[in-house]
Length: 357
Image (cartoon, rainbow, N blue to C red; front, side, top):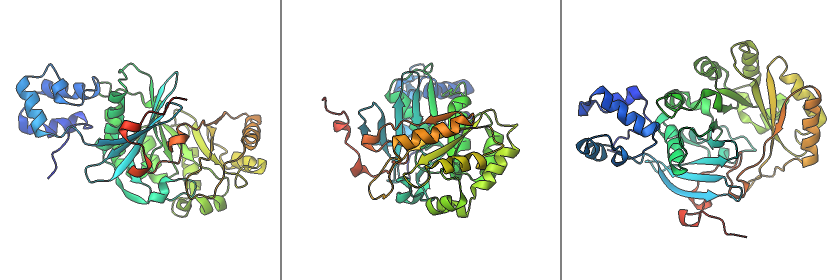
């Protein structure tokens, strides 16, 4: 039987896990603050606890719920981390440093069952959901690894491996820890959830976390296109999610971002742009155009920069905010749609730094 871990637990869950030790409430809160506010991932670093308690914590609980197995550092500064789970499965997390903020792309599942044709993760198939603890630990480990203080401006995007709404119970465990002012203390306004659209679960998520930004992976302006490239359209028609967003638009505290991957000769015409406007009518919205990132075995090609610019300009003429996502980490397959957790595809820790020149 594996040793339980405390890392990633909410305060009520931590109190329950530590109940056998008969600690006082202030001692449990001290441990909670050490893990999240101070980002200390081992009891030996929790210096205001007694030596006896630190030794007990070290012996009684696991302090490595995920093992950082390998990393890959991009020339642009992004880093992909490959974690090995206790059951041997692997999952990837991406750190994207920028001048004004630091972004962490977190995974919610090992693999993905929806098999979108433009996403490498789908080729893995679905292995299992991550636990709430495993979701939190990805962030906690990365914050500790890069020595980012609690005052650092960070963004979190649930755009890694998996469909987040398919693992809603774990998100409901993880987000309170991430957003708790005494926890990791990330504002909900700096968190984005990306989903292909599962209407009933999306409604529950918006009710629970109305300030979290929603990014709907739309990608095609017609049902035929989604059926061909996104098989989930059969069981989760995007029209249901669009109708939901229209109905809940007064509850949303932000505009919905419609993510749209640009595929050469597939969905990048001006007629597609017009159809996209029509499809999303009635929803406070903006558009994020995503250049396709090729991966081994895919016959798809990215739209030319000229096509992307024309598509974006057509949407802007209608008054919409349009951004074109910059592909980060493409040289180490850390960019959008490229996560595929196989150890042999990632450099070793000793080789993680790119050579000069």
